[in-house]
Image (cartoon, rainbow, N blue to C red; front, side, top):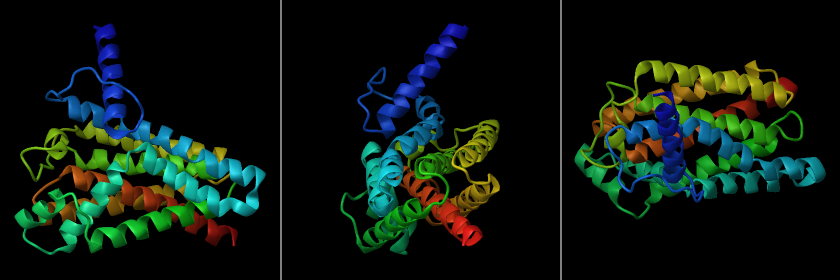
Length: 270
């Protein structure tokens, strides 16, 4: 029984990497069965932390050996994270901005979000969010490798916001798509466990970066709170969650965490 549970857990991790990253990982089976989407989603924060750390390596390396070019390292780090995730969540952010920004009724807004093109709201939102990511990653205080560590925390925090949005009681806006696979599927204990886990990760990596733990925990809590408000707004406007909304929550909570850490450190160290 234990061996079966371990095998199922590994399969879920592989499926999560296959769904949410560019990594050449083949998942078992072509189609998702009931429960597979939720199991994959529950691995997403851990995968996000790993991707954030890897993506932040260019920023850390440049800061270590060419500190005058730190802004370039921040650009490379944010670009690397986008590539590693196949721009999947950024696409969801843009589509959600277009749908909600249209102020159209729910069915029309969902149709706008389904289209493959990108509108003005999506373009502006991407510029603002990615610009904030770059500016924040380039100005985080601490040791040379603090951008990589804080980007890992921010990426994990953003993905915990997606876990929150799939909690029991939050339904899907559509009968198909990724939102329908995971919405209303995550039990409350799992949400609480991941929340505690990502805050513990933030505290540990903050200390590793030479930053007081509270200076990272505050922005994390603020990001998760803002994501909760955004989720409630999407529920009211769209009638529930969609895959695009999950992506928007991930990107916005990641950006808020990064920006919050940079602003807090700038104020405390200024």
